[in-house]
Length: 309
Image (cartoon, rainbow, N blue to C red):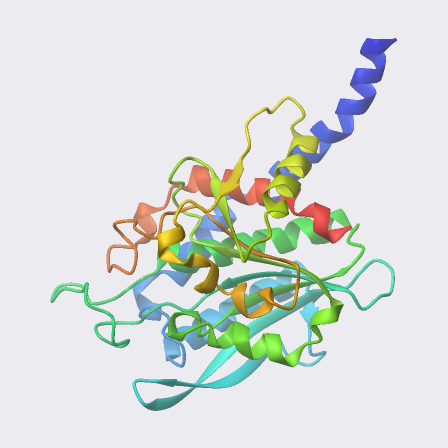
């Protein structure tokens, strides 16, 4: 009898893990990152033609997955910005998966798609060479965007989201969190249950992900406990605390504009901010550990279901 009960309890969890593995695909992650980090997009600087092409690509992916425009009209949400004294226009890309039952509570999954362009397009850019001046931003943050696109596919397939799920690709992060700040001011924070931001998932410093929050120490436990429901025999914690306090990541990622208004607000990150490719022209497609990225994306999908139901 005890063996029979154990099988009944464990089977749904194994099935859930199988589902995520069938929906989130390494080939899809590769396709998205190959395009977003390609030389043709010239480093995706906010306001540039490369950023515009990236936004169009993301919007098309949202549409093909089955997300609808959050505004009801367009996937694009533009805002003014300034770079090196020049006025530019940034564009967030926003898709909506409506809740299975009508309500106005939202959960946000986000990642910034902009990067730092070419040469000294942003004042602090120094690490470029005569033979390569394009900051491709494969890990920072094409990986986060690719993961968000896969999460959208996964949650659409589950058909079980109790809340409205927003999937947002922010622009303007490299200019000072401008896109996320703009959106945080345009929305009613009391209606947002959680903000889950993804950043630099292409290389796991310790073969896991760490959680960046503004003092919410419960998040790590919530994610690990929920992930273990899908992998009941797993004893190690996949999600760990922020190990880079001196880098002040809690104030540097796109969760921050929401953090003082919304309790469950955090960034999931895998690569150290001291990584040798960070803001380097060598942050290329070929440097991504796609097996790690696939596992991280699947684990994030399973763990974050806690906030969607």
